Each structure stands twice: as C-alpha cells, then as structure tokens.
Image (cartoon, helix red, strand yellow):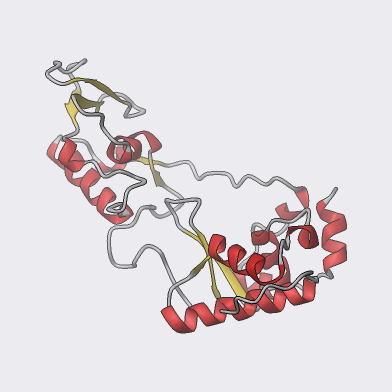
Length: 233
C-alpha cells in the first residue's frame, strides 16, 4: 500500500481509497481488512479523514457510500473485530459446518456461561457454576473451597480460554461449553437465550436500514451531504 503522506481528503477520494485498499488486501491475503488497519492506512496516506465524514463513523460511511463495492463484516463474538471485504466476495469468521457461536432463530449462548469459559481464572482460585440457576451464574472461590451450593459444578481451569489471549477461538469455547454441559447433565437448550436481541441504533436515520437485505442496501444511493444532514437529526 502507498506510504506517501499527503494532506486533505474529499469524500470521493476517501471512497476510492477505501475501495482500493480493501481490494488490494483481499487479493493478497483472501482475508478481511480490519477496520482499524484501514483507518491507519487512510491516515498515513492523507492525514485525518474523520472531519470529512463527521458525524458518521468509518463503518457508517462505508455502509452508506460504498454498499455496492465494499461490505462490512463483524465477528459474531468479538464485537470489536470489524472488517471489510470487496462486494461479491464471501467470508465468515465462523466456519460453516462446524460448531457455531450463534444458534438458529436468534438464539445465543447466555453471556454468563460464555464468561465462565473465557474470563481468566486467577491463580489459587477455583470456579463454580450453578446449573440450577436460570442465569447460569458462576463465582470464583479460593482453591480448596467446597461448592457453594448443591447444584454448583466446577469449571476446570483446563477448559477456560482467555477471551483476549492468542489462543482464543470461539468455536473451541463453544465446544468446551457443550462438552462440560453434557458431562454435568445440563441440557443444551438451557445454554442459550431464546429471545432475539434487539438491534440498538444511535441514530434514527440508520434505524430505517436495519431490516434491509444486503442486496437491497446495495441499491441505495444517497448523496453524502444529505446523509450528513439526516444523521445530525
């Protein structure tokens, strides 16, 4: 990618650069370009681009201005992992045909049991999870402690994967949770929330687009100055 530093962005220049960097990265690696890396490349090339797209964030700018050329994707379990790929290409952070982190019909693993398997366990501590509790809450106690309730079951340290560590793999976490649940007589249906999560929107303007399919979004063309005016409302 171009390392030359210039000054000044226009919305058109920015759109072209985003499309260029996204395609170059994909052609080279066949892997999504992280939004954080894209932002650094853009800043390196012509300085701070944020004043040009304000009040939009980079993700919102791409979704509204480059919907037919660049696609934004997000990791299902690492919300901070946002990336872009060229339109027409396909990529999933979670491989199909293997254990998934999300269940059909909007069901998701309960945050409490997920946390029990990704939150680091302090040295000299033992973790117990209460399988009789509807929320499947857990607590850490000093090593050697007896289970706090009759329904409390230990989560072995060997099954815990640091959610921020280099060995983190969402599929492996799911596999360990399901294996532990089966060993402890916890039905798989109790691992998930059955209520679909509502999509929060920080701006009413973007709320109207949330139910549209990718193909519908690609057909939308709105001048950038109009988007800025609507986004401020």
